[in-house]
Length: 95
Image 1 (cartoon, helix red, strand yellow):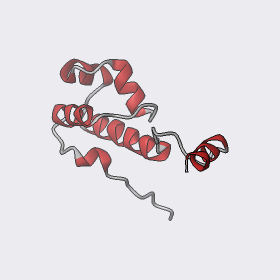
Image 2 (cartoon, helix red, strand yellow; image 1 turned 135 degrees about the vertical axis):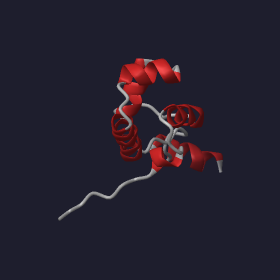
Image 3 (cartoon, helix red, strand yellow; image 1 turned 180 degrees about the horizontal axis):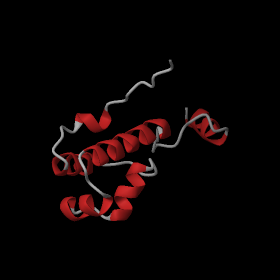
Image 4 (cartoon, helix red, strand yellow; image 1 turned 30 degrees about the vertical axis):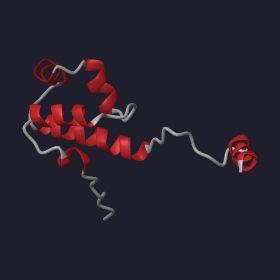
C-alpha cells in the first residue's frame, strides 16, 4: 500500500491537502465587494469598523485568500447582513 501511495504522490494523482476552489473564492470576493458597496462602505470604513486590515479586505475581495469563518462573521456583522449572503453564488444572466 505504501508504494502505491508514494507512486500516486510522485505522479501528481493526489491533490495537495490544502484544496482551493479559486472560482468559489473569486465569487465570494465579488459578493463581499458588492455587498460592501451596496451598504455604502468604503474599504477604509470597513477596515475601521471591522478591525480587519485593508490588505486582508482587498485580498478577500480579489479572491486571493481563503477567509476563515470568523473573518466572514466579522464582515457580515459589520455591514449588518447574514453570513450566508457572503456565500450565495449568483447566476449570471445570459440573455
